[in-house]
Structures are given as C-alpha cells and as structure tokens.
Image (cartoon, rainbow, N blue to C red; front, side):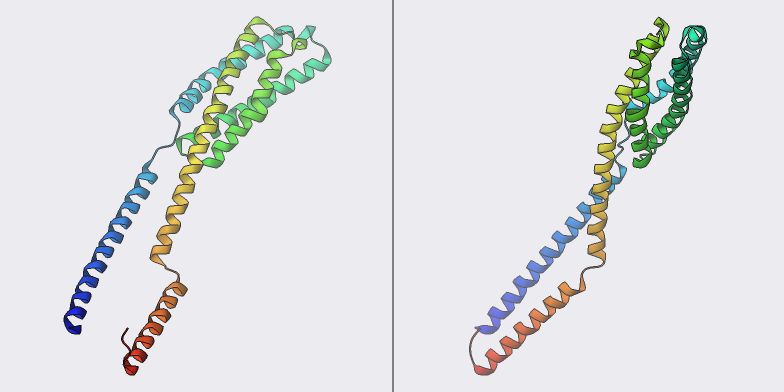
Length: 219
C-alpha cells in the first residue's frame, strides 16, 4: 500500500510543480510585456508642445512691441522706472530663451530635469515678471503693451499647469520603470540567504524523517 501511495504522491507532486513552473513563466512573460508597454508609453504633452510652438513665434512680436513702447514712453518715465524697465526687459528676454529651450527638450525627449527647470522658470520668474509689467500702473502701460502682456500671461499660466501634469506623469513612469527593474534584478540574482535557509529546512526535515524511520515511527 505504501508503494502505490508513494508513486501517486510523486506523480501529483510533479504535476503540481509543472503547473507552478508554467504559472511562474506566464507571470514573468506578463511582467516583461508590462515593462515593455511601460517603456513604450509616450508621456509627452501635445497641448504643452503646441503652446511652446506658438510661444516661440509670439515671443519676437512681444519683445518688439515692448521695446517700441519703451522707446516711445522712455522720456516721460522717472529714472527709477527707467532702470526697472530696462533691467526687466533684459532679464525677461534671457529667461524666455532658456525657458523655451528647456521646455522643448524636456517635453519632446521626456527629460524630467529640463522640464522641471522650465516649470520653475515659468512659475517663479517669468510669470511674476509679466504680471508686474501688466499691473504696475507706474510704468504708464499702453494699450498695445497691455494686450501683448495679457496674451503672454495666458501662455505662461497654461504652460505652468500643463508642465506640472506632464511632470507628474513622467515621474510616475520613471518610478514604475525603477520598480520593474528591481524585480527583474531579483529574478536574475536571487538572495542567497533565502535559498540557503530553504536547504537547511529541507535537510532538517530529511533528518527528522530518517530518525522516525529508524525508530519505526510513522510520519
């Protein structure tokens, strides 16, 4: 009775192990497919890219309009506002060139540092500068200036929101990719202590069975 029982037990054990092996292989394949789909996912923002595209063509018009208005009203401005306007125009022009470059690089190539720099420049420097030029009545704002500043402020507001959403998606994608790489490394290089512990437990179990068999005690 013991021999048929042992053979049937071994048969069912082999079937169970083969089933587990197939399941683990299927899970590994699905994990690889998921990682491939995650790698191929595009997280660049089309609305942000369109906004940057139109911003590139709008910026020369804004700069030319602001410089012409500054030249026309420069004699009637106080020395204090003359210095402020000239400084603001120089800084805004330099920041805008750097900002647009970072926006293009960060969004098209899905680079988090560049896009984060674009977002910070837009939110902390360029948007306050344009709002200062738009709402400070001491600058003797002309209708053309007000119009181009409003359009520029709308561009910046939309880009700040769109860049924040895109940054969040990029960071989530990078975090998912990082965790998948960790799982792949664990599968390729398992922890040796875990398997050595399993071997020790199996050795203890076999020794216990041997002692029971020697004493004639069933197990």
